[in-house]
Length: 337
Image (cartoon, rainbow, N blue to C red; front, side):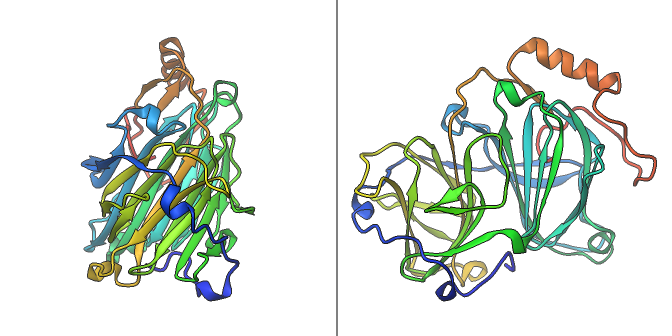
Protein backbone atom coordinates (compact mmCIF):
# COMPACT_ATOMS: atom_id res chain seq x y z
CA UNK A 1 0.00 0.00 0.00
CA UNK A 2 2.17 2.90 -1.23
CA UNK A 3 -0.27 5.72 -0.43
CA UNK A 4 1.96 8.34 1.17
CA UNK A 5 4.29 6.33 3.34
CA UNK A 6 6.71 7.89 5.82
CA UNK A 7 8.57 7.08 9.03
CA UNK A 8 6.21 8.26 11.84
CA UNK A 9 9.21 8.91 14.10
CA UNK A 10 10.24 11.82 11.86
CA UNK A 11 6.82 13.55 11.82
CA UNK A 12 4.97 16.02 14.06
CA UNK A 13 3.19 14.14 16.84
CA UNK A 14 -0.40 14.27 18.01
CA UNK A 15 -0.97 15.17 21.68
CA UNK A 16 -1.09 12.47 24.34
CA UNK A 17 -4.66 11.99 25.60
CA UNK A 18 -4.56 9.13 28.14
CA UNK A 19 -7.92 10.05 29.69
CA UNK A 20 -9.61 9.80 26.28
CA UNK A 21 -8.92 6.04 26.14
CA UNK A 22 -11.56 5.68 28.88
CA UNK A 23 -13.87 8.61 28.10
CA UNK A 24 -13.74 9.03 24.31
CA UNK A 25 -16.76 8.58 22.05
CA UNK A 26 -18.45 5.20 22.12
CA UNK A 27 -19.43 3.30 18.98
CA UNK A 28 -23.18 3.58 18.31
CA UNK A 29 -23.34 0.96 15.55
CA UNK A 30 -21.25 -1.06 13.09
CA UNK A 31 -22.40 -1.43 9.46
CA UNK A 32 -21.05 -3.85 6.85
CA UNK A 33 -20.58 -2.43 3.35
CA UNK A 34 -22.74 -3.87 0.56
CA UNK A 35 -21.16 -5.03 -2.69
CA UNK A 36 -22.58 -3.81 -5.99
CA UNK A 37 -21.61 -3.03 -9.57
CA UNK A 38 -21.00 0.56 -10.65
CA UNK A 39 -19.87 2.49 -13.70
CA UNK A 40 -19.06 0.18 -16.61
CA UNK A 41 -19.14 -2.91 -14.41
CA UNK A 42 -16.66 -2.72 -11.52
CA UNK A 43 -17.38 -3.85 -7.96
CA UNK A 44 -17.55 -1.39 -5.06
CA UNK A 45 -18.22 -1.89 -1.37
CA UNK A 46 -20.65 0.73 -0.05
CA UNK A 47 -21.27 1.20 3.70
CA UNK A 48 -23.61 4.14 3.09
CA UNK A 49 -26.17 5.14 1.96
CA UNK A 50 -28.05 2.17 3.33
CA UNK A 51 -28.03 3.26 6.95
CA UNK A 52 -29.72 6.33 8.43
CA UNK A 53 -28.12 9.18 6.46
CA UNK A 54 -28.56 11.54 9.41
CA UNK A 55 -25.74 9.60 11.10
CA UNK A 56 -23.42 10.38 8.18
CA UNK A 57 -24.48 14.00 7.47
CA UNK A 58 -22.79 15.86 5.68
CA UNK A 59 -21.56 12.74 3.83
CA UNK A 60 -23.83 11.13 1.25
CA UNK A 61 -22.00 8.08 -0.06
CA UNK A 62 -18.77 6.14 0.40
CA UNK A 63 -17.58 3.69 -2.26
CA UNK A 64 -14.56 1.44 -1.62
CA UNK A 65 -12.95 0.23 -4.86
CA UNK A 66 -10.73 -2.81 -4.45
CA UNK A 67 -8.17 -3.67 -3.45
CA UNK A 68 -8.20 -5.71 -6.66
CA UNK A 69 -5.52 -7.17 -8.92
CA UNK A 70 -6.84 -6.60 -12.44
CA UNK A 71 -5.94 -8.97 -15.25
CA UNK A 72 -5.19 -7.39 -18.65
CA UNK A 73 -8.40 -5.91 -20.09
CA UNK A 74 -10.38 -6.06 -16.82
CA UNK A 75 -10.02 -2.51 -15.46
CA UNK A 76 -13.12 -0.36 -15.97
CA UNK A 77 -14.28 3.16 -15.19
CA UNK A 78 -17.33 5.36 -15.66
CA UNK A 79 -18.94 6.88 -18.77
CA UNK A 80 -19.52 10.62 -19.10
CA UNK A 81 -22.23 11.66 -16.64
CA UNK A 82 -23.49 14.78 -14.83
CA UNK A 83 -23.60 15.89 -11.18
CA UNK A 84 -25.20 18.77 -9.30
CA UNK A 85 -25.43 19.80 -5.66
CA UNK A 86 -22.47 18.09 -3.96
CA UNK A 87 -18.75 17.22 -4.16
CA UNK A 88 -16.98 14.00 -5.15
CA UNK A 89 -13.64 13.21 -3.51
CA UNK A 90 -11.65 10.38 -5.15
CA UNK A 91 -8.64 9.12 -3.19
CA UNK A 92 -6.40 6.62 -4.99
CA UNK A 93 -4.35 4.40 -2.67
CA UNK A 94 -2.85 2.00 -5.22
CA UNK A 95 -2.88 2.22 -9.01
CA UNK A 96 -4.21 5.14 -11.06
CA UNK A 97 -7.34 6.81 -12.41
CA UNK A 98 -7.63 9.55 -14.99
CA UNK A 99 -10.28 12.25 -14.83
CA UNK A 100 -11.71 14.74 -17.31
CA UNK A 101 -14.57 17.19 -16.81
CA UNK A 102 -16.41 19.88 -18.72
CA UNK A 103 -14.61 22.71 -16.89
CA UNK A 104 -11.23 21.53 -18.22
CA UNK A 105 -10.23 20.03 -14.88
CA UNK A 106 -8.66 16.62 -14.55
CA UNK A 107 -5.57 14.56 -15.14
CA UNK A 108 -3.98 11.40 -13.77
CA UNK A 109 -4.22 10.66 -10.04
CA UNK A 110 -2.24 7.78 -8.54
CA UNK A 111 -0.68 6.30 -5.38
CA UNK A 112 -1.93 8.70 -2.71
CA UNK A 113 -3.33 11.49 -4.89
CA UNK A 114 -6.81 12.95 -4.43
CA UNK A 115 -9.18 14.44 -6.98
CA UNK A 116 -11.70 16.84 -5.40
CA UNK A 117 -14.49 17.89 -7.73
CA UNK A 118 -17.16 20.35 -6.67
CA UNK A 119 -20.14 19.79 -8.95
CA UNK A 120 -22.04 22.75 -7.50
CA UNK A 121 -24.43 24.15 -10.10
CA UNK A 122 -23.64 21.36 -12.54
CA UNK A 123 -20.83 19.55 -14.33
CA UNK A 124 -20.17 16.49 -16.46
CA UNK A 125 -17.13 14.27 -16.04
CA UNK A 126 -15.60 10.88 -16.76
CA UNK A 127 -13.22 8.68 -14.74
CA UNK A 128 -11.26 5.88 -16.40
CA UNK A 129 -8.28 3.65 -15.65
CA UNK A 130 -5.28 4.75 -17.72
CA UNK A 131 -4.53 2.74 -20.90
CA UNK A 132 -1.48 1.09 -19.27
CA UNK A 133 -3.61 -0.38 -16.45
CA UNK A 134 -6.22 -1.60 -18.92
CA UNK A 135 -3.60 -3.19 -21.19
CA UNK A 136 -1.34 -4.78 -18.60
CA UNK A 137 -3.56 -5.10 -15.53
CA UNK A 138 -2.29 -4.44 -12.03
CA UNK A 139 -3.24 -3.48 -8.49
CA UNK A 140 -6.00 -0.91 -7.98
CA UNK A 141 -7.37 0.42 -4.68
CA UNK A 142 -9.27 3.63 -4.03
CA UNK A 143 -12.17 5.34 -2.33
CA UNK A 144 -14.76 7.86 -3.45
CA UNK A 145 -16.63 10.03 -0.95
CA UNK A 146 -19.64 12.22 -1.74
CA UNK A 147 -19.86 15.37 0.40
CA UNK A 148 -23.14 17.28 0.49
CA UNK A 149 -23.27 21.03 -0.07
CA UNK A 150 -25.45 23.35 2.00
CA UNK A 151 -28.38 24.95 0.19
CA UNK A 152 -26.45 28.21 -0.24
CA UNK A 153 -23.55 26.46 -2.02
CA UNK A 154 -25.45 24.03 -4.27
CA UNK A 155 -25.37 26.64 -7.03
CA UNK A 156 -21.68 27.49 -6.62
CA UNK A 157 -19.59 27.40 -9.83
CA UNK A 158 -17.97 23.98 -10.42
CA UNK A 159 -14.32 23.64 -9.43
CA UNK A 160 -11.59 21.01 -9.42
CA UNK A 161 -8.77 20.45 -6.90
CA UNK A 162 -5.79 18.29 -7.82
CA UNK A 163 -4.26 17.21 -4.50
CA UNK A 164 -0.94 15.42 -4.92
CA UNK A 165 0.30 12.91 -2.35
CA UNK A 166 3.13 15.32 -1.54
CA UNK A 167 0.55 17.98 -0.53
CA UNK A 168 -1.06 15.91 2.22
CA UNK A 169 -0.16 16.68 5.83
CA UNK A 170 1.53 13.74 7.58
CA UNK A 171 1.39 13.26 11.35
CA UNK A 172 2.46 10.65 13.87
CA UNK A 173 0.54 9.30 16.84
CA UNK A 174 1.83 10.31 20.26
CA UNK A 175 3.78 7.04 20.59
CA UNK A 176 5.14 7.08 17.04
CA UNK A 177 3.36 3.82 16.12
CA UNK A 178 0.77 5.23 13.69
CA UNK A 179 0.90 7.33 10.54
CA UNK A 180 -1.99 9.76 9.96
CA UNK A 181 -2.58 11.45 6.61
CA UNK A 182 -4.71 14.61 6.75
CA UNK A 183 -6.43 15.03 3.38
CA UNK A 184 -8.87 17.74 4.47
CA UNK A 185 -9.83 19.58 7.62
CA UNK A 186 -7.86 20.13 10.78
CA UNK A 187 -6.36 17.69 13.28
CA UNK A 188 -4.72 19.05 16.44
CA UNK A 189 -4.00 22.33 14.62
CA UNK A 190 -2.56 20.68 11.49
CA UNK A 191 -4.42 21.52 8.29
CA UNK A 192 -5.01 19.27 5.30
CA UNK A 193 -4.83 20.67 1.74
CA UNK A 194 -8.45 20.02 0.69
CA UNK A 195 -10.53 23.21 0.43
CA UNK A 196 -14.08 22.50 1.58
CA UNK A 197 -17.41 24.32 1.53
CA UNK A 198 -18.73 22.03 4.26
CA UNK A 199 -16.56 21.79 7.42
CA UNK A 200 -15.17 18.23 7.46
CA UNK A 201 -12.17 16.19 8.52
CA UNK A 202 -10.88 13.42 6.20
CA UNK A 203 -8.03 11.19 7.44
CA UNK A 204 -6.30 7.97 6.40
CA UNK A 205 -4.44 6.25 9.25
CA UNK A 206 -2.12 3.25 9.36
CA UNK A 207 -2.07 1.84 12.90
CA UNK A 208 0.74 -0.59 13.72
CA UNK A 209 -0.34 -4.05 14.94
CA UNK A 210 -1.24 -3.83 18.63
CA UNK A 211 -0.94 -0.03 18.72
CA UNK A 212 -3.59 2.38 20.00
CA UNK A 213 -4.39 5.66 18.24
CA UNK A 214 -6.17 8.47 20.08
CA UNK A 215 -7.30 11.53 18.14
CA UNK A 216 -8.73 14.85 19.32
CA UNK A 217 -12.07 15.44 17.57
CA UNK A 218 -14.36 18.46 17.19
CA UNK A 219 -17.26 18.11 19.62
CA UNK A 220 -19.81 19.32 17.05
CA UNK A 221 -18.65 16.92 14.28
CA UNK A 222 -20.03 13.46 13.71
CA UNK A 223 -17.46 10.65 13.43
CA UNK A 224 -17.16 7.60 11.18
CA UNK A 225 -14.44 4.96 10.90
CA UNK A 226 -14.23 2.78 7.78
CA UNK A 227 -11.78 -0.15 7.61
CA UNK A 228 -9.87 -0.40 4.33
CA UNK A 229 -7.96 -3.50 5.42
CA UNK A 230 -7.10 -5.38 8.57
CA UNK A 231 -8.91 -5.49 11.89
CA UNK A 232 -9.04 -3.76 15.24
CA UNK A 233 -11.34 -2.25 17.84
CA UNK A 234 -12.91 1.20 18.20
CA UNK A 235 -14.11 3.27 21.13
CA UNK A 236 -13.36 2.87 24.86
CA UNK A 237 -15.52 -0.29 24.82
CA UNK A 238 -13.20 -1.91 22.20
CA UNK A 239 -15.91 -2.64 19.60
CA UNK A 240 -14.48 -5.01 16.93
CA UNK A 241 -14.31 -3.60 13.39
CA UNK A 242 -12.77 -5.30 10.35
CA UNK A 243 -12.26 -4.75 6.62
CA UNK A 244 -15.40 -3.54 4.87
CA UNK A 245 -17.11 -2.40 8.06
CA UNK A 246 -18.06 1.12 9.16
CA UNK A 247 -18.13 2.15 12.82
CA UNK A 248 -20.47 5.05 13.61
CA UNK A 249 -19.46 6.91 16.76
CA UNK A 250 -22.02 8.50 19.03
CA UNK A 251 -21.53 11.38 21.44
CA UNK A 252 -19.75 11.22 24.79
CA UNK A 253 -18.74 13.44 27.72
CA UNK A 254 -15.85 15.64 26.70
CA UNK A 255 -12.39 14.78 28.03
CA UNK A 256 -9.89 17.23 29.52
CA UNK A 257 -8.61 18.02 25.99
CA UNK A 258 -12.05 18.03 24.35
CA UNK A 259 -13.80 15.29 22.40
CA UNK A 260 -11.77 12.30 21.23
CA UNK A 261 -11.77 9.09 19.20
CA UNK A 262 -9.83 5.98 20.20
CA UNK A 263 -8.98 2.88 18.18
CA UNK A 264 -6.55 -0.02 18.51
CA UNK A 265 -5.20 -2.38 15.87
CA UNK A 266 -5.37 -6.11 16.53
CA UNK A 267 -2.09 -7.70 17.58
CA UNK A 268 -2.10 -9.91 14.50
CA UNK A 269 -3.23 -8.73 11.07
CA UNK A 270 -4.01 -10.48 7.76
CA UNK A 271 -1.10 -10.76 5.34
CA UNK A 272 -2.43 -7.84 3.26
CA UNK A 273 -2.27 -5.63 6.38
CA UNK A 274 0.90 -6.94 7.97
CA UNK A 275 2.30 -3.38 8.23
CA UNK A 276 -0.78 -2.04 10.00
CA UNK A 277 -4.52 -1.58 10.22
CA UNK A 278 -5.67 0.75 7.41
CA UNK A 279 -8.64 2.97 8.27
CA UNK A 280 -10.41 6.10 7.06
CA UNK A 281 -11.67 8.55 9.68
CA UNK A 282 -14.39 10.94 8.55
CA UNK A 283 -16.19 13.69 10.40
CA UNK A 284 -18.17 16.77 9.57
CA UNK A 285 -20.52 19.44 10.80
CA UNK A 286 -24.04 18.18 10.01
CA UNK A 287 -25.93 20.35 7.51
CA UNK A 288 -29.39 19.25 8.72
CA UNK A 289 -31.26 20.36 5.60
CA UNK A 290 -33.84 18.44 3.55
CA UNK A 291 -32.29 16.10 0.97
CA UNK A 292 -33.84 15.24 -2.40
CA UNK A 293 -31.63 12.91 -4.43
CA UNK A 294 -31.91 10.96 -7.62
CA UNK A 295 -28.94 9.35 -9.32
CA UNK A 296 -26.25 11.99 -9.86
CA UNK A 297 -28.20 14.94 -8.42
CA UNK A 298 -28.53 15.88 -4.72
CA UNK A 299 -30.69 18.91 -3.98
CA UNK A 300 -33.17 20.09 -1.34
CA UNK A 301 -36.50 19.63 -3.16
CA UNK A 302 -38.10 17.36 -5.76
CA UNK A 303 -38.64 20.41 -7.98
CA UNK A 304 -34.89 21.07 -7.98
CA UNK A 305 -34.23 17.47 -9.05
CA UNK A 306 -36.64 17.87 -11.97
CA UNK A 307 -34.92 21.14 -12.88
CA UNK A 308 -31.52 19.38 -12.76
CA UNK A 309 -32.66 16.80 -15.33
CA UNK A 310 -34.09 19.54 -17.54
CA UNK A 311 -30.88 21.58 -17.30
CA UNK A 312 -28.77 18.52 -18.11
CA UNK A 313 -30.90 17.61 -21.13
CA UNK A 314 -30.74 21.23 -22.32
CA UNK A 315 -26.94 21.22 -22.20
CA UNK A 316 -26.63 23.57 -19.24
CA UNK A 317 -24.15 21.38 -17.32
CA UNK A 318 -21.21 21.87 -19.64
CA UNK A 319 -20.35 20.45 -23.03
CA UNK A 320 -18.37 17.23 -23.42
CA UNK A 321 -15.12 18.15 -25.22
CA UNK A 322 -14.56 16.86 -28.74
CA UNK A 323 -11.17 15.34 -27.86
CA UNK A 324 -12.15 12.46 -25.60
CA UNK A 325 -12.34 8.70 -25.35
CA UNK A 326 -15.82 7.82 -26.66
CA UNK A 327 -18.23 6.67 -23.98
CA UNK A 328 -21.96 6.77 -23.69
CA UNK A 329 -23.34 9.57 -21.48
CA UNK A 330 -25.91 8.79 -18.79
CA UNK A 331 -27.75 10.58 -16.03
CA UNK A 332 -28.41 7.35 -14.15
CA UNK A 333 -25.07 6.83 -12.38
CA UNK A 334 -25.80 6.30 -8.66
CA UNK A 335 -22.32 5.69 -7.25
CA UNK A 336 -18.77 6.28 -8.39
CA UNK A 337 -18.37 9.50 -10.31
